[in-house]
Image (cartoon, rainbow, N blue to C red; front, top):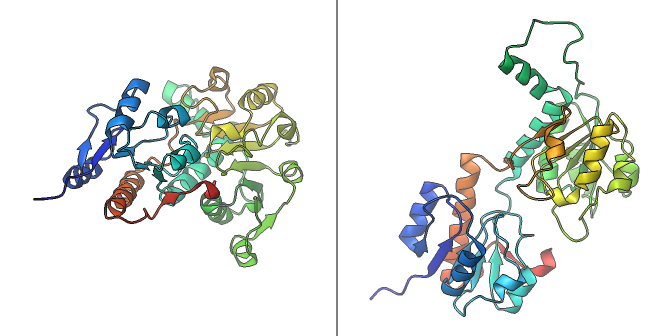
Length: 328
């Protein structure tokens, strides 16, 4: 007799190849559509499942975890960010949490450079003119943007993604600066010719472009607050492909409207999918719908990591990507 297969609930549609493999290995409940589970559906899932596979759109907070049944033993998150999961409460209940780190590094770095280019070279304005048919031909002073080469890029959070952004920006001739919780090893700094700033205030006041690449934690909430944003040069550009909560979005919006900051490129927002309508109407802002990790290759690799974490757990071992509170 084969052993009883683990019950797995997946909260969103995943790439077909990932869903098929999950179905082969486990007693999995898949979604027919791609809408998030309601709160009631999430409660039912944690009561019934051995393993929950949530995404960033699911709030796995203490109240939800407290309603989990005795069967739930692993929350195998589909994604690297885990600020939507109360890891401490899960641990107290004896529930492990895993994630999928490292997979989205290159894809998110690509989007970061795309946003930097889009804002500094005014690509959306050019695209809009072509789409409306209003282009009357080339002119010497039309759509003048700025050259990336020689500009100072200040990276806020020099982890995997921040370092990948630095490598790309270096190829464009940008001067790399960074602020991090811990300074990089000298050899890592030298690889991207990066200048370290212990003082974030001092760094942001001198940069032409700020790239936010740090996770959202209690210590990084509104790290770019109104006071700190006021330190930016009027010609500076802010790009965020990490978490919206790191920037005081209302303050950023006010400064962009007033021309106190030259522009912004945003892939994430403080209120999640509820982007600020005032931002949408600004010509100096480029907004994307959280596309940082949106490549076919990356999404399949994320699914493969989820499967490895579940399979390792099912075999009685610690998931390779287990998250513990000390890591946060």
